[in-house]
Image (tube, rainbow, N blue to C red; front, side):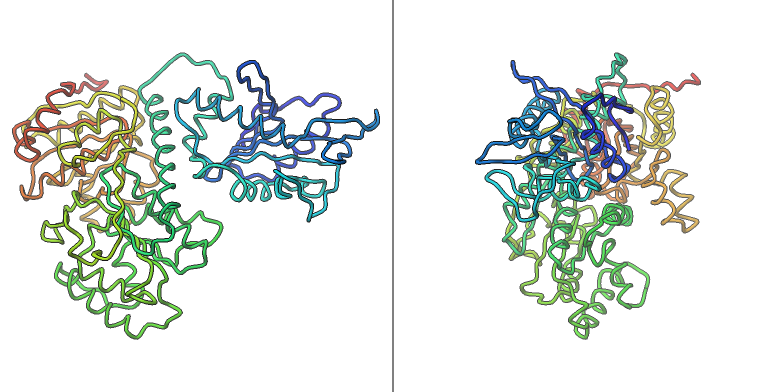
Length: 561
């Protein structure tokens, strides 16, 4: 676990703080950050947080520590030590005001509002407090008494989650931004990759604020969340599955693509509490129930869902799902929906939440008519529109406007200019490889980069495919140990800091616009488009050509020449 500072000095008279520090240091998870004596100035007022806990995917807690024997008489707090009994300010009020000052300072420093959960707490390591004690403005759960302070980590977590203000857990990337401000390290060198990390932390924080949508719609049993690329739909889908699982419901979290399925599994595997009974690809769920495997698109689109529906008719009630959450729901064919709903406890009323972008219907399972899903299986769903683009910088988001609709609203930072590398489609693959080498030479880490093709696979991708090593291929991507080579169709719902979009042609020009939309929207910080401008205009229209006309014309030069 990281400590700020690494070895704090506790002077004479600060035995209580040291005792609580040691207890937190030994009981908090390794990915937490523990800070001592955080000084905050707000206007002319000065505040100090004795101990500050930053807990990724949970939140933060400011802890005021009071040694000696602490008591309250008629609303007045007292502290008894070697010098006798004397009045003290309310440690609850001190903790509350110091946390408030810290949040205001961080918002000013980071340029964004904090929506992460945060709690103010008081630790009394040498005082016993009855379990049923309470007072106005301070429930017992915000007090760590002598016994609680011996192993306080889980109680801190509970206080943050149940008593803390804020709508979302603390994103790990946003935690890193906070740590940089608290540490006060001086480093004047600014690189593209580090700037991108800060931008992406802000994007993650914005995404978490979407949790308010789930809170506002919690009483609606069937919702169709529709939003453009980068609007945080996958985060919302995972969070919805978590909330439903915590309620004790049997939840299925589904998608179509294998890469996205592994990502969802990685996200849910670390949950300590309840988790979905199934997470991953729809067809893997079907196989897991005992439906025999087959081959051919007609089998997967028609025969497999028919067999699942037949099996569902005999399914044990205890094995049925209470709720279904589907990410990238536009990929699901109508028959899949019918079969999946048949696996719920009541196909007519069980909870169903679809997260989708009808403009990314790259598989055309709806006959190209996904813009009007109200005529399909989701007809009775309440539509909720998620218009804000949170994943991409504004420079990247500009390239999406020709595809994303009138309500598409970029919310990211300005970011780096989009780069355009002009070349014939038949040369695009080789030029894209040169781009990857040049970007690594600029200082981008190789695991920040993805090269995505629009037609033929990259040789690295093709090798995995021909060896039948698809699972290994996606495990390597999620491990994030090197550059990634993929196709836009398989990268839906995924992202990397840098995307080199290799436009090496299209197998079907009628689907070209959707493929471009997916490919352009996968980059968080830097987008490099490689291909022929004439083909790009034919696929994406004049508006895309106009946007790319403002891009930075780039010729990659690697370190070798």
